[in-house]
Length: 437
Image 1: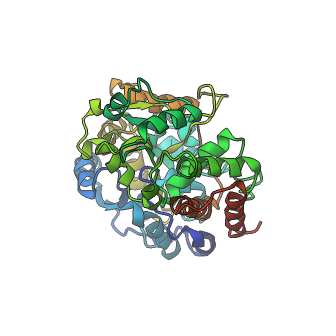
Image 2 (image 1 turned 90 degrees about the vertical axis):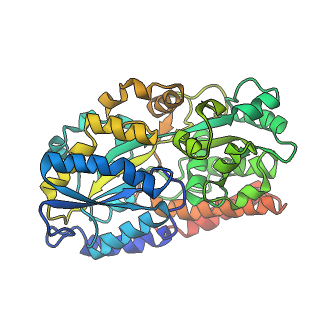
Image 3 (image 1 turned 60 degrees about the horizontal axis):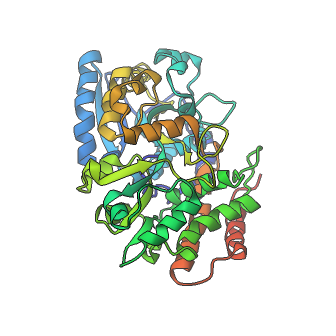
């Protein structure tokens, strides 16, 4: 997902919502749009503000209308509201024709039955499935089923570092392993400044970070048959390592335990925090007043060695997908719009505007996506990123484990001990809140 501002507030009730949706949603009768020459589109907030998104998207929607005669009614939905808006639409049948979804929600929303499956015929209508990068397709729904969505914007996590703070501390290059990050971080954590920022109260961000660390410790958080597996030694080690950046290593400021709205980026831009692990951050830094030469970017850390295929995961596969509600009365128009938005030309325009990576292979060849910063992200997606579990309970996972990590950060900030036993106890409590299979 693009914005890690929490959209998961209502996800703890997702299984109940989706059960209802599976019964009442996804019918081909009825629909959200009674005008065959129009479409409604919920776009996620990708830019620095909703107004920025409107300025980016409206000219493209006008272009589509001129080309097809179909008017697209745009609403940019804030991330804090998006998941709950979508869940309400799946149960009521009163939603948009087309919408953006965080790619980590694909399997959860797929299980509602409300979204159009992207079978071979539908993919053919937009130019074919083989146009898309394989890693992006891996976050479009549960394995063995037709995807529930189509990739629109691709992103990955990287380590962004503040060049001024590194220079002032006499540090010549960014760390590549976690041990190096801690060692480097202790040189940077002084005079009221901290080495690395976290968003300790942001449930989705917590999940993204501990999922990657879990992969590095050999844990997946779910068994191959989809059962929650939050208390394995690897999962416990991953969560403890992340929280220990504050609790034991003392390279994260205690106040970060309360961060949930991109405050760590503000600290980074104000030379208060030297590093952040973030998704596709260049546009956000610009909005914070930073110049491109004020910051550098490197692959996110691994336990040892280097990231890469067959070596070590260092990012989740982040991104935004496009989905179509099955009950639209303008299925032909919806397919035309998805084809337009995922076309080679539009992929270049939109991903340039948002500083993201096109999930369409040909569009990635544009030199604009070969900058040093985007090159790191593109290489990460190609070689060392893994998709979050594509299971119907993924949103509950974000909520309950994300909350466990939040509570552990609160303990660390308050000076309470964070031990292997206390981490495991929090994860056991989280696992008990998951639906029983």
